[in-house]
Image 1 (cartoon, one colour):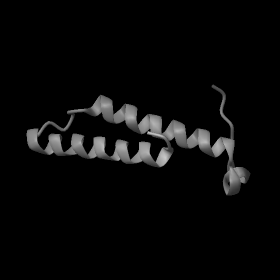
Image 2 (image 1 turned 120 degrees about the vertical axis):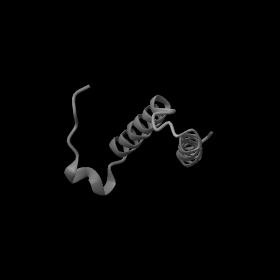
Image 3 (image 1 turned 180 degrees about the vertical axis):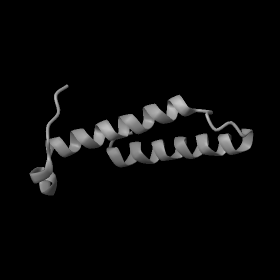
Length: 66
């Protein structure tokens, strides 16, 4: 995967597959850890991209301590 759009599409496909398997098995917690990791990583990537080039978001940005 070379760019964020490709990674986002892959993550979307994985999350859809998890949701499908949950529906098939009736297990609402199936893949919950994987889902959490995917969502958290997407938020981290988005946050990093915004911090690198805030554009219109700049007036509202608050940097948090690591």
